[in-house]
Image (cartoon, rainbow, N blue to C red):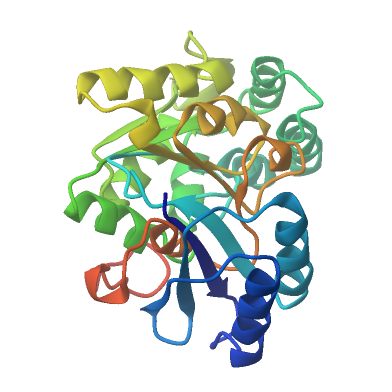
Length: 305
């Protein structure tokens, strides 16, 4: 069975010295590369192997690659390109934690941000923490949401990632513990086919401090992944899920390829794939996409012109 070791540099170029060092480590441990392919010239390299390196060899590779700030991934050739993408929004596709930004605009940023951090680390039950954070917004003007949305930014490579997978036939779904007010907007800009989030209750132009039930939480994300697999007759092994926090854990472990994007520590043990130094385009290189197959993204932000 073939495997691919994918190296993606955070610097403009992947140093030849690093490539040589990786090749030497593999050969010294009995893993002879069958070929090397540039997915992105001088930036993202795929090294094909006949077998997967053992834990000892991987630790040696990790030591030099982490020091050089190079993301690396070991993936089987079979089923490499995924047919379903399920993505978290806040701090994954979008740069912000939108609830934290709303709270900051409302003058309760510190209290909400602290609860968010504890929730993302898995220290507080998600549903409880979300209710507590939303309660702090009670009475604030609904117009605050529009001002936060106007300032939102996408993480680098977001549109490239989604639009490329969609162009190659994948179904793309945005699933967030955040609010539908933002998920619908981000989904349209990035090219997601579907989006899901929580509904923030409004009355008389003000935030009530409550959410419409049921709350979309960690298990809901996994349940929706399974529902879309059924809907489109896709195996869970053919799904890619990406997220950054504890509430993404269930969907990441369910998907055939779970990727932690600058993941919180709680996510690192549950998936071998972590984007730590590079951008969302890396999730395409993991699947073997070459630059000539990839959508060319416009400058950061939500503009397409």
